[in-house]
Amino acid sequence: MRTSRLIYIGLIIGLLVAVGFSVYFYQQVQHYDAQIETANASSDELPKYHFALIGEEMDHDYWRLVGQGAKAMEDHHNVFIEYEGPRRSNPDEQLKLLDMAIQSQVDGIIVQALNDQFEPLINQAVNNGIPVITIDTDAPDSLRSTYIGTDNYKAGQLAGQALLEDTSGEVNVGIVTGSFSNTHHQLRVEGFRSVVDQADNVEVVTIEESNITRVVAEEKAHKMLQEYPDINALYGTSALDGIGMVRAAESLNQLQDLYMATFDTLPENIALLEQGKVDVLIGQKPYEMGERSVELMLELMKGHMIQDVYHTEASVVRQNNVNAIKDQLGDLP
Ligand code: BGC
Image (cartoon, rainbow, N blue to C red; front, side, top):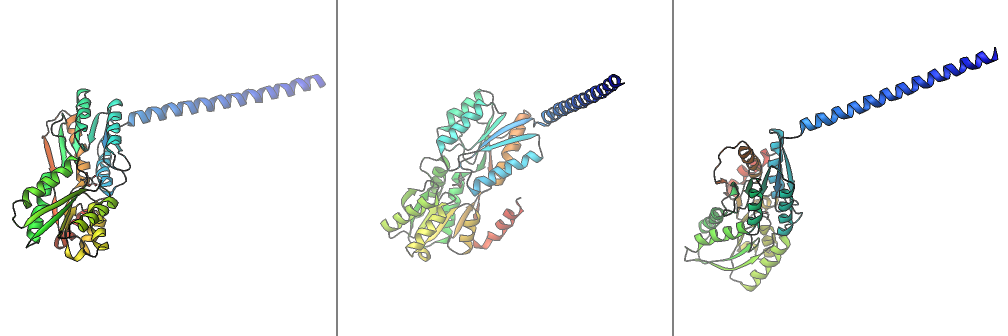
């Protein structure tokens, strides 16, 4: 009796253990299948194209807009935009990112070609079968497919024309430029000069570079205002130059005597314009540049012909039309 009871209990335990193992293995198999399904689903969902977008500096409102415009295209097209750039402007780091994009064989590269050093790498990318589009700053002699951005020479001319329209008498200009070696700043200076040099009453007395920071812009504007007391107009070619110029003029108590023109309709610049501390802003379309750069790259993927250059609008913004610009900016996501 006792022996048969023990056998009975043993059988029940054996049965429970077997059921337990079966349940465990069933769950394991289910889990594994689910993993495979997830993996398959995500590989199906991988975007068809992977584009690298390389900007000048990530920690900057202007470049945030470029990035937002490009990333917005992911919602409408089968594309992943890898948006990268140095935190602060650093051409060497930007070149490294360009090199890395080539090494990782992305489908297309959209890059700001800050200076001549970008040309060989752009050509290398194209020779490796990766199409390149330049954005914001062009490298027209490279093998890039197209350029999307401001006509920087013309934008400089717009600033020069605005100065001629808004001033009279003898005008002595100090220029604060982002960088002597950056192509777009060179063009903005050349365009400006091409207009003001025609006027007998206007003279560019000095030019300094701000390294595209507000701190250096302030330092250089301060220096030039002290060295050339007859300066009565300042022209800044980069987004933060105006902020530095205003600070320098305020600290020397000269703001009311100066005509101020600078680039970009960033919120801080618009505020300075509304306060009457800056007279003119040259507005650009960074969001549109980002958006259209991706559309153009997709056209290239389809094998479609595209133009050699696409210029986005540059506009003269004064107090009397700033509200229209604010409305446009307000429409951006
Ligand atoms: C230029 C950009 C630059 C930005 C910040 C803009 O005016 O178009 O190239 O990165 O200013 O300085």
